Image (cartoon, rainbow, N blue to C red; front, side):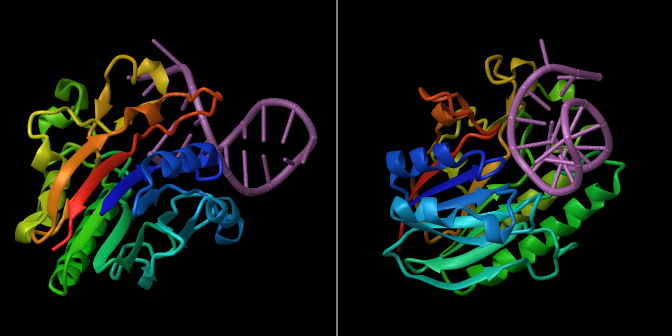
Length: 260
DNA sequence: ATGTCACGCTGGGCGTGA
């Protein structure tokens, strides 16, 4: 199974790049985050024209997640929303069974600042995600992929000294992410690229991408019965393309999984 | 900390979020 996780920062603004990604990688599933579109305005037709279909969970202006799957592949038991999540109105979780694997696309709250109320919401969301993920894993192969908005280790940010009093690197957030990995879940990128940088996000501002000021905050977490064949971050999609179509501030994480 | 982007609302800049 070729699985891609990508925070697109608006699926309408990013549509040319999404179609480019589907054409280039021909993935079995794309876990999409930050679609930033209401359900009725989701670009189903354009995605259908290239042989894919979207299962989406949408809020409207903010958030929004989706799974893009080849049109001829059966998708079973799609479910939008995370049981026990702090704010069900924020569309941050969608899951479905694809080729016998329970696949989740998740967009964890940013948290803003450690002192902000949204920081506690972020931790509660991670806890609800842990409960649901481990419940699903008891039933079979499971992959959670998305923008987790946490850098697991110091080396997962460009300069840990720049993160004093910042979110994404606190012990509480890292504990929340580590808890997702319990029970044999594999951090797919680290599994096959233990010494690579693996940044997936660079601020649009200050030439951060050019200067290597990135973070590894997008992950694919695979249950133990799935073998990770390869994983890489496709940074081509963090640059303008030849037609001048703009990038997201995240690059796609491309993972190959061997099914049991 | 911020040099950017995308949204809705609205009729072209502003407020919000990241």
